Picture 1 (spheres, helix red, strand yellow):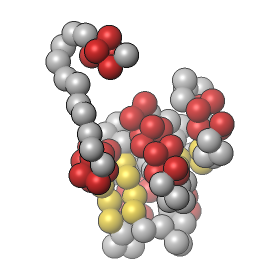
Picture 2 (picture 1 turned 90 degrees about the vertical axis):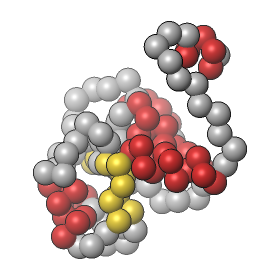
Picture 3 (picture 1 turned 30 degrees about the vertical axis):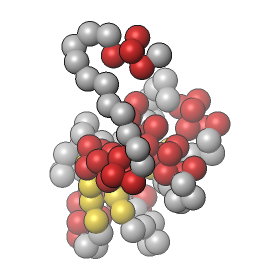
Picture 4 (picture 1 turned 90 degrees about the horizontal axis):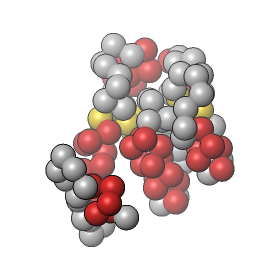
Length: 114
């Protein structure tokens, strides 16, 4: 997962882990509020970005919308012919497998979700 520290990406990583999927991820080394969550879940963040972060047994690379196709890990995944999905694409696949509810709008989402 390229950009694993993002709010949505970290939640997706945890869900994948609980589904029995082996998850690895990379991001910048700066402190972020999801660091503790990832650590508690046993998900190590690799930094800096590097083609070597795309392990040989990788089947799928999920990329945060914060990064472009010019990220060196995305380029490596594509060079190797791996499936590369954006965060919204991966989330869409996940919601097809489970009953899902979405809350949208400009105000009240947190209150409604709570």
